[in-house]
Image 1 (cartoon, one colour):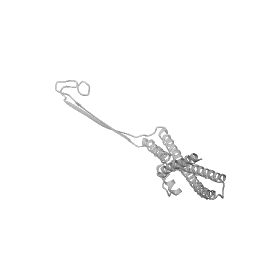
Image 2 (cartoon, one colour; image 1 turned 180 degrees about the horizontal axis):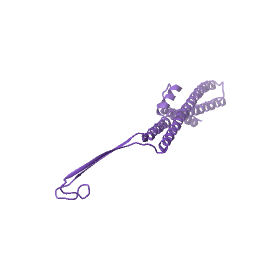
Image 3 (cartoon, rainbow, N blue to C red; image 1 turned 90 degrees about the vertical axis):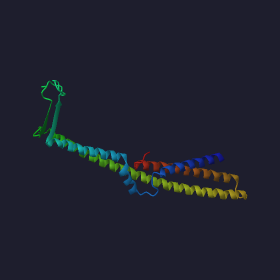
Image 4 (cartoon, rainbow, N blue to C red; image 1 turned 30 degrees about the vertical axis):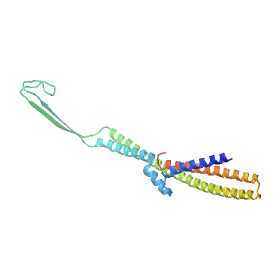
Length: 227
């Protein structure tokens, strides 16, 4: 029985240490609104969705660019040494011309491509609208996950409080029975049963603590913290 109780106490200490590690990531006093605000700022799912939305909006601008005039420029300069007919440009040249160059500027404007550009723009707009809907859906899903995990933590905290109160009451009762046993008013069997109830309360407290650890880990993940 003593070994069993010592093992239970060790497990409780381990669970408390793990819970303390999770508490460093999640603020102690955290409202649901604050948890959701943190998730909206840093959750990877929302950030990646926003980046894809920004890329789809830029794709619309890129498709529209074909409607505007296109300008290009070029310049060439060639040099030749004395008494040579082979220029730096790689062609045959008059040796009297030491160097020469050329440049040009061109401007083009799309008149019609039989609807190709307009269809590309429409397709890009449709993709941007679809991505906006996916981004909104991702935000709603994150908010729902945070709310669900948040209330799971509250429930687990209440269970821990009840388990702790039960544990305290059974320890106190066992001490009283132990004193009565010393006074020959309770039997060894009564004391053994009381000790067994204490062990059960310790196990319940341990399980409640583990459930709280899991709930806090789920909330941390839902808020976008590293798992």
